[in-house]
Image 1 (cartoon, rainbow, N blue to C red):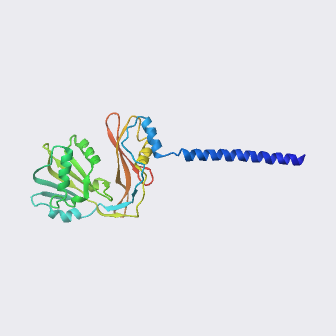
Image 2 (cartoon, rainbow, N blue to C red):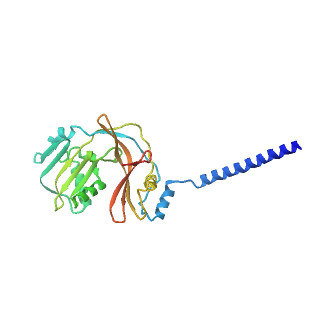
Length: 270
């Protein structure tokens, strides 16, 4: 009788174990066949009537970059500029006024194209080829001035991505006839990769992070998602920059703001 009880007890244990293992196996299969992904979050956002640009879930690579803000590059090279320019420099900020206005074109695209040609001439701009047009910064400048009379170019960090800082900007000033009348310039020197390139989160993942942290709300529109280098910290006079995804977001009142996501670990940057 005792032997039969022991058999029944073991049989019950084995049945319970089998049921548990079968349940665990089903859960594993569900996880494998229906993985949570950044694109799943994107689909959820579209259900919330959030308008998105074309996004990729492909992961690129990037690295930390250091640069020096306090340097004498502009001071040392200011004499290469045209002699008829009015040139002043103070605390690393170079201000240049042209002797006569320079025609650029009527549309923003024409103006940007003209300035890109101008950047190639060292007598016009110091180290001009290190800068590229920054649409987001130009939009902020237009909002601050109340009109589109400033075009902003930013220094390139690595892989042609832009520094997201005023410390490496060229701000071209236009008159009411869309002619260039002068500019101001700051320069970042000694740009250095601090380690080998590492994997970054994707565009789609960055948008999903901002959404999950309630930085993107229902009925809003994500205008674009760009990779830039944002200031992280300062060490012994050098500024350390981290790759980050820059999201331009438009609300229902047509107000545009930017959010930044650390492209290494997916945390929000402020």
